[in-house]
Amino acid sequence: MISSVPQLTDLTKPRILLMGPRRSGKTSILRVVFQKMPPHETLFLESTHAVDIRLANNNPFLQFQIWDFPGDFFFNRVSRNGGEGGGGGRELGGSMTQEGEGEGPKGRELLDEVGVFGAPAALVFVLDAQDEPYHEALTRLVDLVARGQSVNPSLHVVVFIHKVDGDLFLSDEHKVDCQRDVQHRIAQELRDASLEHVEVSCFLTSIYDHSIFEAFSKIVQRLTHQLPVMENLLNYLISACKMEKSFLFDVVSRLYLATDSNPVDMQTYEMCVDMIDVVVDVSCIYGVKYDAKGEAEGPVYDSDSSSTIHLSNGMVLYLREVDE
Amino acid sequence: MARDTMRLSPTLDVEHHHVRFLGNLVLNLWDCGGQDAFYESYFDSQRDLIFRSVEVLIYVFDVESADTEKDMSHFMGVLEAIDQYSPDAKLFVLIHKMDLVAEEDRESVFLDRQKMILGLATSRFNFAVTFFKTSIWDETLYKAWSGIVYQLVPNVKALEEQLNSLCEICGANEMVLFERATFLVIAHATHAAHSDVHRFEKISNIIKQFKLSCGKTQAQFHGMEVGNSAFTAYIDLFTSNTYIMVILSDSRIHTTTTQINVKAARAAFEAFVP
Ligand SMILES: Nc1nc2c(ncn2[C@@H]2O[C@H](COP(=O)(O)OP(=O)(O)OP(=O)(O)O)[C@@H](O)[C@H]2O)c(=O)[nH]1
Ligand SMILES: Nc1nc2c(ncn2[C@@H]2O[C@H](COP(=O)(O)OP(=O)(O)OP(=O)(O)O)[C@@H](O)[C@H]2O)c(=O)[nH]1
Ligand SMILES: [Mg+2]
Ligand SMILES: [Mg+2]
Image (cartoon, rainbow over all chains, first blue to last red; front, top):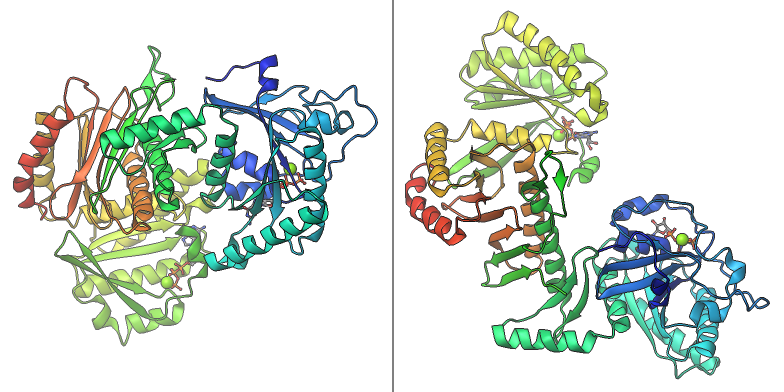
């Protein structure tokens, strides 16, 4: 599933560019979503000093690069020749090792706009919702959008209104107000910069609940070419099997790669994620396989993994492994 | 939630709680405040009220306590009163907050403490005491409660025999009965060795966690089946107040067969654990 040496072809895979002010939570998101770091442990993360590139290839439908930028990243305007941004990526996976944050493209001085945006990419701008006022951050966002658009008009731009948790964001109303405010201001700033044609979608996120997984799922879906095909298959599945809702999940990251065209409700998605947790946790207890020497062997989530959960309201959750 | 306990304030005097267990077994829990002043009244003015018709005494020692001598003298006072008013009570001692002791020392610290307490207690009284080392930060507390509750389940031996024969008939590796409301283990039959001694607590936690997430959608958890190429686990409502978990690893046994067997056994078990 995971090749040990990054191949050259990996560098042509679509990029997810995590940018935004210092301490806004970029590295935390990467760790929580892709490396299973418990959210409270992100408190001890150090600031990122150079662009850190990771490869996600959990399965054939989840193939992309994630670029984690330092908060104070500056584009290089002088040296254009060294602009190939994919110096060397590292695998994401359970057994990631920390080999110093500075790998990847050698230092920030090699990166100009073409090096960063000049390939299929999604810019994910992480805004710390607990760090008002947002003025400076939003100016930075618009600057990034302008630079990105100039080299890649199809650049997909997403804003995470991040850290919407804790005492400052107790009610949903509060979050929605914040989202409306930010969206309004972004639209205004884009207009002022004559960039009103650029579509920017905003998500409310926090690493302390499922929202970050939901938001990241949407971005991954935008980068997947097979999406329409998968959606059609799922639509066919639910109508043939009289199901209410279906998701195609990447079990490792808990992101969903596709869903049918019925509306997604957050609670159903969360319940499915929790179901995957149950299946993996129970399998870790009773489903470990042993080799001749009595050592644990192979993943506990395997091609025969499946589960059914019955609820009192007649609802049934069904999970099974699908092959490529 | 373990971390929420930081906000608890000291218990003033005695707080009363009821826990319904196995449907009609109501446990009246008396949470007795541990500050010195309360002990005086327990031993004196409230003595009769507190210590009469006690079925179970659970005494909690703080392993990090600064004054073990005082702790011991309080405990001896309690034993004296129990001996006088409820000599048939079952006694349990928790050596608590074990997470504060380095992992490699836990067993020896626990044994030391147990020896000290038993030494003093048996020099004056004739009680059987069951000891547990516990912490709210891991499965040990759950294990202690399961152990305590186990001794309160009527006919537990007969129940286990029944479960063993059901396990045999089904060709299962393991069968476990959980109490419905608390998800504490009340009996198990194990016919294939398993190296993880904490597995029941873990399963219980996994299910309790999932029940919480079901609660958000106003639905309740009924049952589930989980498996991979090596096993099938099947958890379902069993008698009115229990869940049963069946673990199978023999792929020739079809789970529907097991379900039929389990269903057929339901009525017989209802007589032991309603
Ligand atoms: N409350 C809350 N805190 C978060 C969240 N995400 C990240 N944090 C905290 O934000 C702080 C900074 O996180 P990082 O991930 O290092 O931020 P960064 O954007 O990578 O920072 P630089 O590398 O300096 O640009 C850490 O203390 C995290 O614990 C969130 O969703 N909610
Ligand atoms: N480290 C650790 N702390 C614990 C544990 N159990 C309880 N505590 C902490 O101990 C403190 C006192 O807990 P309480 O439950 O109020 O103690 P209590 O015995 O009811 O106290 P009284 O009501 O005064 O008798 C709280 O801050 C708890 O968080 C444990 O297993 N480990
Ligand atoms: Mg960082
Ligand atoms: Mg108390």
